[in-house]
Amino acid sequence: MSYDSVNPYTGELMKHFDEHSDEAMEDALSRADACFRSFGTVEARAEVLRKAAALMRERREDLARMITLEMGKLIRESRDEVELSASILDYYAEKAPKLLARRPLEESTVGEAWLELEPIGVLIGVEPWNYPFYQLVRFVGPNIAAGNTILMKHAPGVPQCAVAFEKVMQDAGAPDGAYINLFLSNDQVSRLIADPRIQGVALTGSERAGESLAAQAGKALKKSTMELGGNDAFIVMEDFDPRLAARMAAQGRMGNCGQVCVGSKRFIVVDKIADEFLAELMRLMAQYIPGNPMDESTTLGPLSSSLALDRLVEQLDIALRHGATLLMGGSRPAGPGAFLSPTILTDIDRSNPAYSQEFFGPVAMFFRAKDEDEAMKIANDSPFGLGGAICTSDPRRARRLASRLQSGMVFINYPALTAPELPFGGIKRSGYGRELSGLGIEEFVNKKMVCMV
Ligand code: NDP
Image (cartoon, rainbow, N blue to C red; front, top):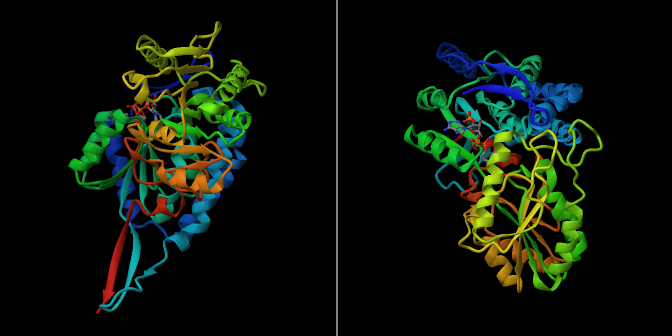
């Protein structure tokens, strides 16, 4: 396992970090455990989050540069990520006292009863590289507010971001042990999960990682949340403007160079407007031009690493060998960087492995449906169930179709987005549990019932 900071645009190794030793891991665990026992009041913890948010804003340019240099995100998207991350920390700083307040159980017929929401202890976060700060704060905001302490294993490709966030937390006044970044091997993570001092595990990542970590958490009887992949449908009804739908589709597919779990990935369009939608989508996707992600004018950044590009190209080859048609893209542009040109596939049969796979990059899958029922059938015919979008100009139809979509989140007339107050998470092979909003703070707390008979 190597924690190497490599620029995916130039291929340059910027910095190498050694893994933490077992002794360092044990030391971190003891400090996190000790901190948990004496973690301050909710007001004090909220103050740490508030300061961390302010520091992220103050350091926005440096943090944004770091994201772009380590994983290739367009610099303006990196700035947006830093702002969003700060807003999540602020959200929990402001809302935590209310979200964690004692809840009377009015229905009790036995006596006065209530719920107390108590922290449970030291948690492990295992996070991915696609949003190096946002992924951290989704877990850190609610859990520091709740009074849990955190050991973080970030993805090996973004170690400088991992260290920078730990510094933000330290500078914000987090007590020693409240938040510790660790460069760990998977084997070390397994040993931590089994340790009785650890009380919970949160992962955002692939299905492969989810299967492994959920099994380990289950074996140790630890609470876990799994935020895994998605293959979100973007459904367009015949009553919606196909050109507007195509604009949102391109935005939903191409953000973060397509490396978004909740990105729009399968475009399912009712026949009547399918040709117009597709022509416009192709025109718009062709406007994403590869370039240096540090340049303000660049529209298409590289993928996060050359390995990610190799995997995506192989996945495309398999899809084409199984009969898919390549409408555009599919090539590596000449020049430096881990780029894939914007790609659209169609004619993807159920027997094609691509039909049920997530493409983590700028690859759109296009499907025609004869009507609403067929569109919903295709949309739900997926092992995943993270998000989804429905475009229709009829609000009653929108509500009806939203209820039929098998997913954790549905957006009407917009591609997926994220906000501190909106719960985030999925069903089926997209995982379980929710992050963000009031639901996010409830995942790793003891909802203790007290009844005075
Ligand atoms: P991974 O799931 O491998 O990585 C995500 C995080 O999980 C990393 O920190 C990784 O660390 C860790 N991890 C993976 N397996 C284990 C394990 N057994 N024990 C402990 N930690 C583990 O994703 P990749 O980066 O390889 O991306 C592959 C695919 O995953 C993408 O193509 C995409 O489909 C999906 N993905 C989904 C994301 C989402 O937002 N839901 C985000 C990123 C990826 P390490 O590398 O050290 O094993």
